[in-house]
Image (cartoon, rainbow, N blue to C red):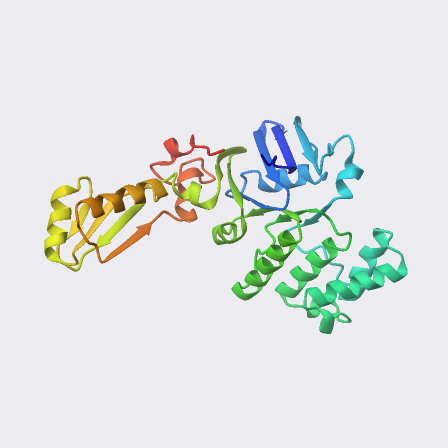
Length: 327
């Protein structure tokens, strides 16, 4: 039996500023070498979570381990293992791209030769070699973000916090950043990602946590979360009107389109439900031309599980759905 090793754990994490509670008993467990995405609306506590886990802020209460160390008792040990990239690039605008990287190498005490080697390697890896001697003001938004991430990687951290790293980027630059994240994880790096881009979490994350008003209201894989909200169904399309009529008479709880010869059957999209339907069709000798599975997307999950700044749920199902948690 394989035991999961965790790069990050947090239990009972709480943070308040006066009467305003930002985090209210947050529990997290992030496996090594995976991407964990934290979703939530503005003010949900995402950035505060990143700040606490990366030693930039202290929690009021809670037990935390990052890379096996307590950020409060041993912040240096934590900082030696992590890198942090925020939604606003921390690039020094008065230094060239190369100089920014060399400065980070000096801060990590790499030595002149090793710092130069690491800088050259990262410039090549992030496609910045041709812009190495230019000031960041000449960079595009995507280039600045790549330089910022390259600076984070100078010290070869094993855990990286990305706080809304693709905010403001065009789709091409965003996809380029996604590929970089995938390559990092393939090398065994753990990535903790906070984002408002639902497609980003869907594309990258092994597990996703949905944060709302300081609490983790749901957690699981993207597919697991999509099954939490209503709207999933299986659609059967028939070529033979007789087969369509037989299926319509036999199945209950479905909707049908007589012109298109299609049936829509509520389903959570699970393998178990699909197998049961296919087995039934085979036993009844009913042949469907096409079967398609439709599940809610992360937009539906986000709206169902989170509230607007006013505190009103995004949807009528939110009250019930907010209590659903997958572990």
